[in-house]
Image 1 (cartoon, rainbow, N blue to C red):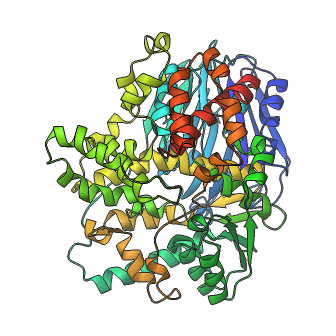
Image 2 (image 1 turned 45 degrees about the horizontal axis):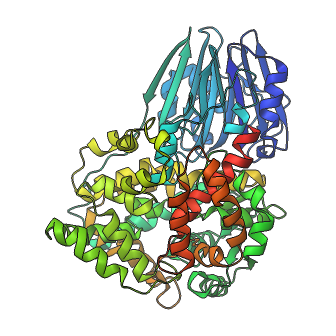
Image 3 (image 1 turned 60 degrees about the vertical axis):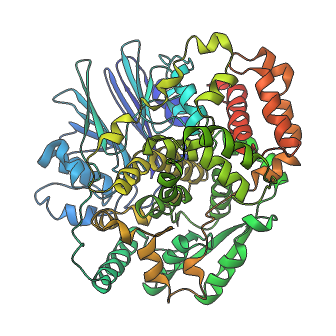
Length: 620
């Protein structure tokens, strides 16, 4: 696990040192450099696998150079295919160098793990950049003044003297919808993110981007009995968790839900040495500490509860929200940060249950998908006039996904296009809202309707069932561009490697072969997982409603965070803003504080961007 950075073009040893030094928390156990004329590559190392080494990884002839951030879980198996090569270390990284010598860039299809990497072929004067299949690791790159610059994080790229910062207004428009900027775009003009499962080659100034892997769906298990499928699922989960979990002592982030509880079950069965860590909130509808305690006691595991209060969050806010470089208003970053901070003193590796929701319909929006077709049969007059007025009469609640919030969000986002409606449901500002929110002179520079340009290619995949089309979109957007970055950054900022066993290749392959009814039955997602774990968890915990790492932001905005919100979104600041119409911001705030609406998502999205603008962008 590491941080990587480099350039192809103009640069120096100081450029490299500055770039990799800005992300040194990603690898406190060593720093390595490669410099040759117009190519520079640097790496920080967090030592997890293999012995220490004194220089950047290369082949025997020093003409293939590699910097890799991540873990390759099948490197020992792959190493056995490389007889005749001289290995200087027992690391997973060195295996990649020799795989490239034998198989070329096609080695990417062979490796199983999470990674972003930079590989330089000195003889061909060719640089490769690559990102893992599911996007667990990010890689930023851009060409500025004829020099290609790259890094694990935006702040690393920004240290190169050729970097120029300018907000990409099209990306800003997308942020307001998605609450993040979808790849390949970034919030900085001219800077890009590699999409998951792809690689880039750069040679003689020519750039080629290619997809080396993608999700595919079929009904392989259609004729299998439920009993047979459960048995296969059990075997796949056990082997994958065995593969991904480390041999030494580690931690598991235990929310109390079925995903993390499943990790606890299998790690206990495998005889692994681990403890659990749980986020605890004062607000009852968000607090899963009781469930987590019950799971830990049931499996006789030591569990540590980490109390997360608004006062703690405010005190650590600078550290938390500077992690991401780009504005991203995913609130689960907050518990992820505090769990990683606590884990830092105990573990180098932790496991987290992300990924299975995307693979097996774990989100409430998939339930809404089952209802929306019926709703869309009503005439436009009812959907645009009658129903919204009726919903406005519902009492406003701040509870976890309260009824009024869910119904209002459902109606607001019920677009006829299945891909668009899911992003409206998950995100913040729709097109009408953004037109009111943005300043008029800004609207002239932005095409509001361009908000799906980054992801429209995902809607064209041919999948056997509509539910798989939607799953595919979540796997290509929400998972790699919000879930994985917040997991990676919160862990790496605290020098902790957070692994996601549910995103192992074998689990992805298995779930992609399942008929849709095993993922979602009636209005319930993760049907097969619930059936598998029903008798393995105490009580009815396998069927408990999902909360994940839900955060009581709506409550906090009303109280402890209110002064901070009003400071950053004040009328005075908004009048001077290049982005927002102060009257619309005032309207959003007033409706929330007067309890006429639960606008916490809109407010948090605005607040995070304004904070990023004043504190992160200013210092890039």
